[in-house]
Image (cartoon, rainbow, N blue to C red; front, side, top):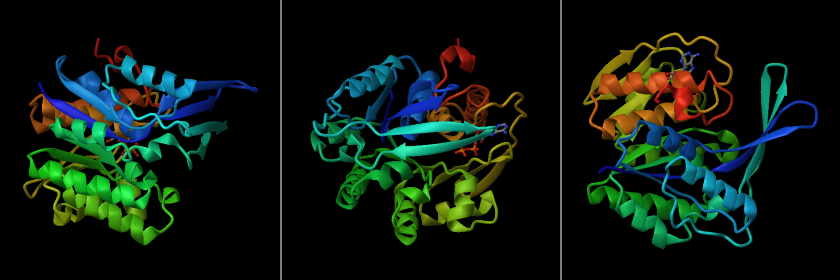
Length: 303
Ligand code: ADP
């Protein structure tokens, strides 16, 4: 049995559904990836999520939803005076705009309850985290998390990291670039999206992003680039994997997250690289043909 643990935030999502109606879902980058990892994992694989929630009814619903996806979320810390983060998606024609209320979210406290966190980390073959996970943590907690992940590596665990660079979540750009680089340098697998890397680090090509992360210490890098080739770098060898055209794209939310989850799950199942990449591209290709971050196994074409 393999075990994948994701560490991050899940939020309440409200998307405008016409007039004064809102549709409510749950979403968050690491959670999204775990959802698709679960869908691509062996039945007996353990897929777990570490976060923190409040003691309110919306937190109860969020946990129930996470568990409904077959994701283990057993000892989630409850922070009595905090609530889940929330964001809205408003449509203006085809343009989507996002507004966030996450400054005081319970998830920011996820490292303050070390018992469950380190128990889950110790049991995981792969720990998956992101630049958003790091951006929302208080600085001391961020250092505690990174130090714990270094220990995990010393005991043979693997780290998978999506830089998911969101400049608005960081007060200071230099610190953002430093933290992202440190986390990527610790990681065995780094899964950036070229658009983010180009903007934040000024990379000219996805190959440049892959090489930059490899130079920092990441042994395995996969750079996603929308409909353009996916760039894979491992053991010094760069390979470009073309992406099959996808028709009827309606919402690219969670394209990268779903790719990551499917890719990691396929590697844990022992699939060769090219099969894992094409399963991940197929998964992301289905996700973007549906509204919202989370789609069913049925819509993924897996049942
Ligand atoms: P992110 O959501 O992190 O910005 P990308 O936009 O790079 O990530 O997309 C992740 C993956 O989703 C791509 O590698 C590709 O497999 C798939 N994808 C995204 N956009 C398209 C598209 N227009 N056509 C086909 N596949 C796409």
